[in-house]
Each structure stands twice: as structure tokens, then as C-alpha cells.
Length: 312
Image (cartoon, rainbow, N blue to C red; front, side, top):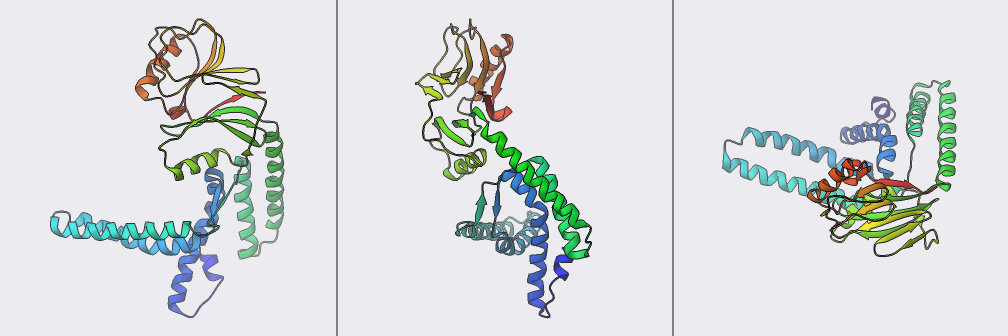
């Protein structure tokens, strides 16, 4: 923060206080950019005004919360202070949401590999060394970092173009799956009714970073209970299983309503059993126990994360 702060001088005390706060925000943002892009695949363009709102307000609210704990033995005083804190929190949330709704508030679609995250931090260190400490040999490290980031990006694009897989996502208590072919996706058998629209967009937009919608594909055939993708056969189970399945399938996809009422799952061969988020835990447990007894790999997206089946 100090090198950033010292880079600009202002004789006005009030302006200096604002600039000091901006320097802290810039320092924090610079050091977290690679991690934010890696985990959330997006960058907040208005982070500076947002922090100018949040930092002073959150400091006041934090002090108020400490005082609230101290005056807790006095119910009347605690009640009024709690009300003031609630208003302050709502005001901060209102202002931040207002900034978020501004045009271009978020840049999306970033996809960083772990190697690129390390290279990005090396790039930042070298850049700061040149700008603030005039250490010119760091330019070599800067150029090497840029080259690594570009080469890994090229390698990722090549890998993505060859990708073909079927995914079942972890959406809490909801259900969604995609067919991924290269850099395009096709949604299959989605059920997000009742899910918060913002949460839905955020979770699936992260899962589909760098992907574009696929209008149609001859690679799959979908019927109410069967999904045929290339040479993979997937059974969608949305009702109780009362007798063992007399077939060989690659995946049994358990969705809401798929109860196990049979002592045995199958008399054939099953490669995987996948339970999505729409299946309640008390229905998932019997399936998991039966799968273990029959040596069938079981994947619960709620605990194991999204499921991916490679198609080639």
C-alpha cells in the first residue's frame, strides 16, 4: 500500500485521507486479482467506489457491533443500537447493490489455470519491482510471465476444442446437466423451478465459462427416461425402483422421486450411479448403501461436486 500511496501527493488533508483509502483498496485488489479470476471467473470494475462506500461504513458497523455486545445486559439500549446497526447494514447493502447494477459493473468469462495464477503473481511482483523500485532486471521476469500465460491459454483452447463430455451440476436442491462439445454446451433435463435467478445465473455462468450455446446436436437422443449420448446410455430415474434393472447402462441418473424399493439395483452392468441435488438425502442414502454392496461407483453431486462423463 505504501508505494502506491507515496506515488501521489496532495496537500489537502481530506483528499489525502480519501487517497489513502484508495491506496489500501488498490493494493488489496491487485494482490487478489489472480485468485478472484481463478475462483469466480469475473472482475468487479467498480471495486474502487464500492470499497470507498464499504470500508468506512463497515468500520463504523464493526465498532457498533462491539458496543452492542458490551451493552447487551441493558435490553432497551441494546434494542435501539441493534436497530441502528440493522439500518446501517441495509444501507451498505443497498449502496453496493446499486453499484453492482451500473452498466459494465462486472467483467465475466475469465478462465485461469493454476499455472497462470502463479505466473500472474510473478508478473505482478516483477511489474511492481519495475514501477516502484526501478529494478529493471525484473522486466525479464515480467516477459516470461506473460509468455507463460499466453502459452497456457493456447493449450487450454486446444484442450477445450477436443472436449466432449456430459456434466451433472451441483445446484443445491435443483437439477441441471449439460452436454459439452468443444466450446459449446447444450442443456439437458434442467429443473431449476423456484431457484433464485441471481444464484442460478452465477453458478451456471461459472460452470460455462468460455462456452457458447449449442443450437442442436446429432450426438445425443433424449427421451423421458433414456439419454443416449454417442455410445453412452444413461437412464433417468424419477420414480421408485421396485425391481432390479434388467439392462446394461453406463449411468443411472437419480433425480427427484427416485426411491429405492428393491433389495437389488440391477442384474446387468452399471458403470456409475449419479444422484443430483433434487434427490433428498434420505432417498440418497439407501442408493449409496446398495451401490456399495454391489461395487457400483456412486457419485452424489451435493458432497462430491459436479459429475463429468467423458465421451471420447
